[in-house]
Image (tube, rainbow, N blue to C red; front, side, top):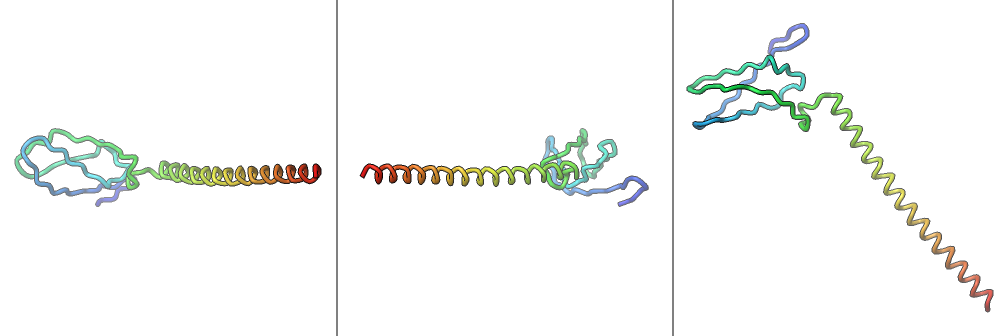
Length: 116
């Protein structure tokens, strides 16, 4: 690795045994701040490199930019809070139903006592 004032040069080596025909090689685990224009590919052997492409895998934790990771973490936290609130709401609704049932039973008991 070579470090410059505002960038770094990183070299990766991939060893692969290729069969005849077209083959795609995917190199993962690279930084999310990679400059796609700086990608250089070479190799040894009897083959032709047809091209290179760069794609960001935003679902990969390794390649996720810090801002996106922060947003993802916030979404997960808020989803957990919503689940907690919904569970508490269900509990309160059941308690309310139980209290209403108890009120009806008390009222019916008073009516029955009054009639007797």
